[in-house]
Length: 496
Image (tube, rainbow, N blue to C red; front, side, top):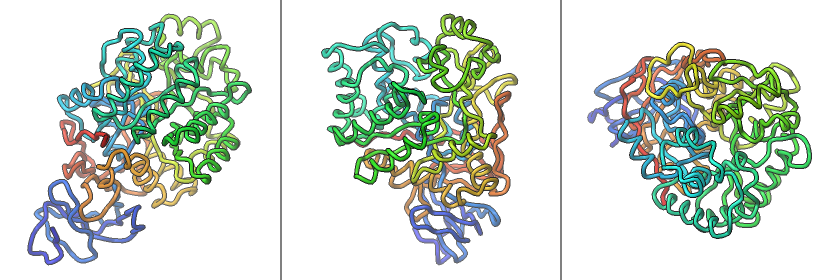
């Protein structure tokens, strides 16, 4: 519906914004009309709407698309909404039952769009340890102590696993989530077979690489070369999760290898988040006491969230891994305040056409219980600041402070780049990440000077600077105020 004549009013007009459309390269002052769940006009001329909002001085862009969000709860997604996210997808871990995960999310109601990959790891828990399918993060927590999910499997069991994963792709899974870094003993043959099945299905895989180490053997470079080899050997689209933390201190070698692979035509993509720290289960293979030196850190660079303590020594780390294997911990592997570490981190963030993806983590309260429904976030709860401020930090640190990304390039990496990574397998993504007539009205209006991260490692706080956020044409944020009851989010399903 055109509104240029001014005779047919749309639902809402955003007047006078600096509009950035990453697909066409538009970066100029425009008026944008929304009717229902679609953008209906983008014009330099005045537009007529039942409601008109003066957004001069603000940026209007597509809402951010997060390919890597473990914060699949109302609390987690409300934090992400205030960070500019309109679509938060769980693609690294995924779901053992995509149908059940989507149904549970729809019943609960989500403020932003949501979707899941078919989970290799959780399917292993279900098939080999008898774990019932559940919410992905709760399933991880409840079944981390299982004895078979992380062990090598027989050929027959691998066939069962591949068939189950294929069924979950056909049920709407957005590719296949493969966090093999949590089960590094499962073997290259199984990983290669999984990539071949993904190629047959025409869907991407999302890999947490097998090793995190700056030392040989079993280095980060070796792990990423496995991902590239799977792409070369099967033709599958292989997506590498969190290039920053995966690379550890081998980013130069890995970035060069990745760039060469792309130049030769391999279907490989990647993502990063702007922090020199991660968050993981305290018993993850790569933070075992004997493996920490391979990342160049000691136990006191780990902070155990249930108690808030920095791990004192190897003995304490061993105790925590035994008593609470699924307990979450910060891993401070680099210090972005140090010039050498900052340059290393920036190499991963500025890699050509890498997406910004948060790796958002659950909020946990004292004792380690997950905070799933509370708002505001309770005092003394903790989560990695990437969970509430990944995108604000991108614009605050990389754009405003360091000037290493232009504002339009930052918008592109938060919107069009992630959309294009999955749009072949998810045709609905072709209507997102654009500010054009006919595109989905998933939009952010933000103040480019004040869009800022507010949370930290000692407290949880939402970002500031998002003035309006629309998901499917519905206001989730209006004049900076969050609609905590919003159910605007819709499921995003794979097209297979």
